[in-house]
Image (tube, rainbow, N blue to C red):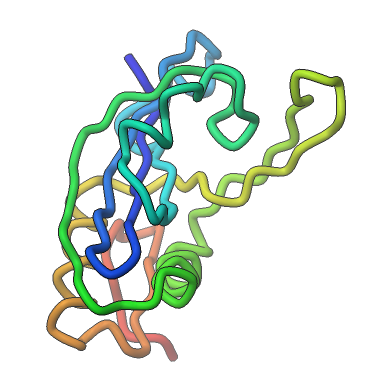
Length: 144
């Protein structure tokens, strides 16, 4: 089993939910909730091809569990929207890269896939403004 990730592509943004393949006890315990949310301008398969060597992917293979198509959205702005929405569920972690340097991946979150689905839909219909993820209720709520 893999941890998950959401990736988007520029112009045609393709958010994809990924699950990280790891035997780490924390990952195993939270596998259904661990997702990486990011944006890419290329093909998802190309982006994750060397995940096992990339600290962004926690030096492990990942599995694509969902993809979405978004068009005419700035890649960086979209990633910032996802990160703002899911900030309350961001996993704080530090790992050593393959050269032994500490890396702090910021794109991993404990959030159910159906909430990512909802966030993508709300981005599409413009209703995402002032929404944030509430980890206590596991849903999107209006920011106060």
